Image (cartoon, rainbow, N blue to C red; front, side):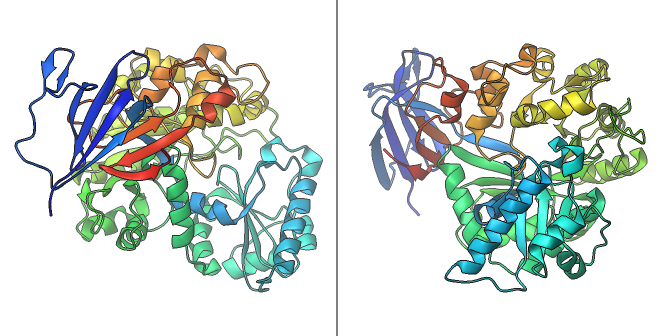
Length: 515
């Protein structure tokens, strides 16, 4: 196959007065030169011309638009995110009553639609936030049964750490529920796979829509930590031509030894992906979540009776066991730790095993643990929108702690690499939303939450490119984004969240083009 070159002319470098021409040959940035400089000079350096001629060359005039490296989402559950494109979203419900009214309207609309509603079809809703509801407006089995009747209904909490189901769904899924109708954390994780089987819906159409939506926001890659056989999922997707994103696939501990036995090693390429898909990481969930009050903390939660400090999902010995297996087989480790005590346990495990990777979330840290991230060479993989969404939950339940919640600036100042993500569908898969949350620490008219933890826009951008910095360079992957505005200009939070993306290139191919 002949070589493919794309020449992008008249592109601006953000925060500078430089206008450049860029050449991308077979998925790699090969030349960056001052606009119109046929000799390929840039800042006094000569970039040698390729020793070969491309079989096909296209030229795109950026028209003075700003060029940045391609954006990544460092933490997604992509199947669940894709499912939100066709599911009931309860994020705006402020009480159990309102959630049930939204469910009632949704069921009525489905039943009255042209396609109708099969009584055996699972109805799935997402993102209810009962941790912010009043005590007399909490989920109940009676309430959901009254609305859903015999139609099986499953609702996932915003943090995906519990579910609210009716009796019909509980029977179909083989789970037991009490008067609350809630399915607890560990059992709920097991429900995901059953739920996908039970719905019987073709996921490819929704995944394709989610992929297109991501590309339109400048996203070129994701880390996928879906609680399923993610390797098999992406093998199927790439084979079906779903190939607009780079994908770093995570394997959970329960599937790790099976994956190794099947020949998978860290960094292995997924077939039919043309290098876009790789199995890279073991994902381990060490503790619970803030919204379910199960994140493992050194101090008891405020306003909770009986007293609780949360729970660990694995013992320290189990965590070290799985980290050792991962390291021996070339896998990085992405370890979920939210509570401050869970972070201490996980840092200890990284130190004892020599494993590499990231701590996912790092939402509450003891001051003395911050420097350990850098000392151990770990990335703090954080989701800035969580700080905005959960600020009131922090005040309610972490009011007595001396640890630091959502300490992004503290980590950055300590030299810890930050990696931004969404944890979609917990927050929307949109790097501009994440960057705005990190820069402004608010998403409405409220004052900035913990303004001392705000980050600058360049830092936020660098934290969104998976190690590719904030400015393109020769030798980088051909993952580029053209913007209609300079991202370094002064904007409101709302303007930054809605940054207009004119075009996205992934591996040298246009995956979104609106020039």
